[in-house]
Amino acid sequence: MLAYGCTADATDEYLRLGESTTLSCLTNFTESVIQLFGEEYLRRPTTEDLQRLLDIGEIRGFPGMVGSIDCMHWEWKNCPTAWKGQYTRTLNDINVFDRSPIFDDILQGRAPRVQYVVNGHQYDMAYYLTDGIYPKWSTFIQSISLPQGPKAELFAKVQESTRKDVERAFGVLQSRFAIVKNPAILWDKKQIGMVMRTCIILHNMVVENERNGYTQYDTSEFEEGTSTRSSNVDAPNTSEMPPNLANMLLIRTHLRDRQLHERLKNDLVENIWNKFGNDEDE
Image 1 (tube, helix red, strand yellow):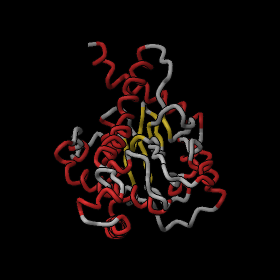
Image 2 (cartoon, helix red, strand yellow; image 1 turned 180 degrees about the horizontal axis):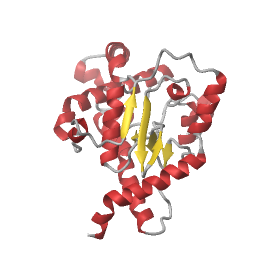
Image 3 (cartoon, one colour; image 1 turned 90 degrees about the vertical axis):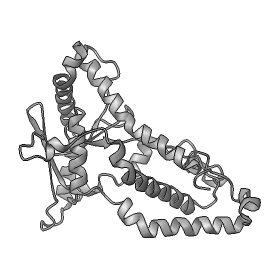
Image 4 (cartoon, one colour; image 1 turned 180 degrees about the vertical axis):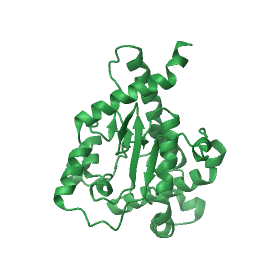
């Protein structure tokens, strides 16, 4: 069912299992995978993980970038009629983002501390590449919809090609597990969530096992003694007092700072031009 997206009663003749037995097996399997491997394969990025992501981002022309962010929609075919207003065409990228805990660790002071330099300016908050629907915060960098001039055109080209990583990840996940490609045919909302988490865990296992075979970016230059990396990650200081409401509001304001977003974006435009501009001239 996970790999081919078939219905439970489609296994009647092939596996000699009834529909109820098949659904019970699916539930037990997803619960076991999450219980045994969820802590490792659904964990937050460690300091080492973040440093590797920052090094890859710097090679690609985006110092301080930790990845791309987007939403994948999974239709719920058997959604109860009374719930359709909640789950049908109402959860777009912004609504899902509003419910997401992605910045909770930053607001509460538990996230590793990141510092990086772009175009001679120092920043202390990592960012994601996004499409145009996301807000103009210091943690989101969008493309330029109508680029004017060669610098803006090159930035838009590099940003959009880099941001496609998340789209490719969704495509690989759906190709491996057809159950998340087809409309969800399960009835229980909790079971649907467990199926998605199980598929992500298995996908992360495959990525970990095959990563060395298709890594496109060599970060060994940053691991040498004379490292030229412009970004660094420090572990969070857990000995500090828990953040109070005032500190959390200051961090929230900094995270949503539009002026800082514009300055960072302008610095990235210059950085991309300095790094890849000569290649365009050729």
